[in-house]
View 1 (cartoon, helix red, strand yellow):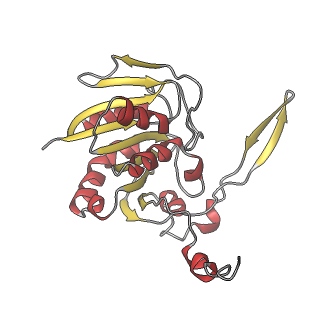
View 2: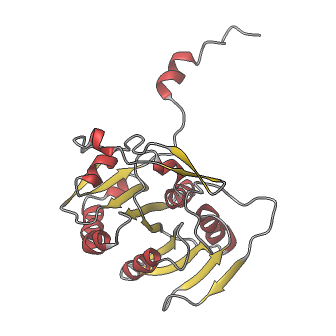
View 3: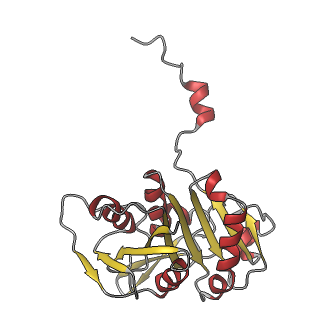
Length: 245
């Protein structure tokens, strides 16, 4: 049975990366695209509440129903599921031009769309690549799909984050690294700009981390989780107020 695939991104529905992902997905099932009208990078899991959204069906991809939503990637997934009643089997998000690894995952609209779909009980994968080009994705996406399928990764868990270096040499299963950028603010022409420098080199040998993995030219596949409770601390302190009135 062909998969019912939902595709979104955070670079906007007219971005090059989503076109590449649609072309790949069409080989594996029927596809619907619901993506932001304009770029929504760094919007994380934001939603539009208590104000209207512009939503429009457009003709953009051959043989694919496509809609833009003038809101965030998470809202795009929500509209597809709750608005269009699209019972998709899997959500594919991306391909983001720029890695989503380490702490950047917290801010990523690409990853947030996958989290939203996963929270609905759907399978979900976020795809990102290096900012320089999509060459790594083009060269390795079929190998990655075979790897995910052959190893039944989506049977083990429903939420993954996958990053492609520019010239992949293999695939590794990883965990989320830490902060891989410094942060500072530049004051230019009366305005402040937030920027930073890549500091992944300090952990470059730790190939079990997604941050170091991609810098060493490996495709990084990371299972993500929604859990925000620190279970170790919870078990330690859960009875602290048992005698309180």
